Image (cartoon, rainbow, N blue to C red):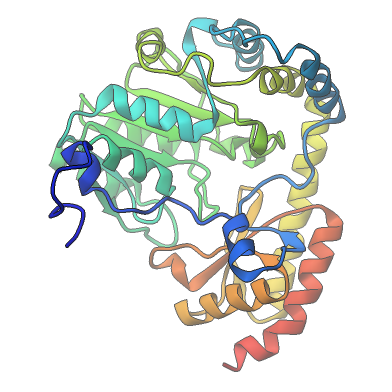
Length: 374
């Protein structure tokens, strides 16, 4: 008997009872509990091993002294800092506990039960998690040449008259990117009622050509950004969106107004002001991408082009990708592999600090002959 067939004695809604008992991710902590040993290298979740800037760390430590106070429910200081950074008015900015939180809120704004959504096959699973949680239907479009297929996504949106299309640029898990001009043309190709949810979590690592000018007044575009990646504050849980004022006002109807804590606000405000530290992180990540590409080449593998803080490496098959993840885990290294074809023939490795990159390179070189011969 499954959840759908069980007697209705739990009080849950029919929708909740129909959902699978799964979460979008299995965290490294769960893997550590299962194996009984800790990972020495944590390179699977695209966290920044560089951490936040020293100035942001200091601001967060100081914020502990007022932790007994609620954070400003309007997030005025943080939104003002973001407005100055992005060049848009504060009325265009919404705040949440990371992009994961904001995606759930925005899905709630736009989806009725049965509403149609379009996204790439294998794209960020948390988005699909929220769509299912609010009763939407999602159509997944396969990658083409290991990239988001913008033409196919637009055709599917037109055919299904989709309410939402989700797109990450740069993309996770491929690391690929589209130009700002391509994204603008893609938005124009969507049906009039369709809203594009543009996830720009990795934008700071991307080349200038990937950045579409901010048009925060467009009601058909919601852009998501985060302090979890380049700014090194994944554990603080703070992100923001850029959208039309009406969208931000609607967000106020459903968001958790005290959902971002005082410490996160303090760190985000100072992190935005410390762009020199951000530039150092971005430059070091670029060096790491080159190192991982060279490592892949030396092992007879191919690293996919990346505009993110990770590199996706083609190891040739799903079986070999699984074997590589397992062998590295046994050696104390946490990485992941994409879950959907064609990228499930790959492994995905976060670019950490230089010492972590050296350790990963040494371990993979040692393990690869055995993996390759399986």
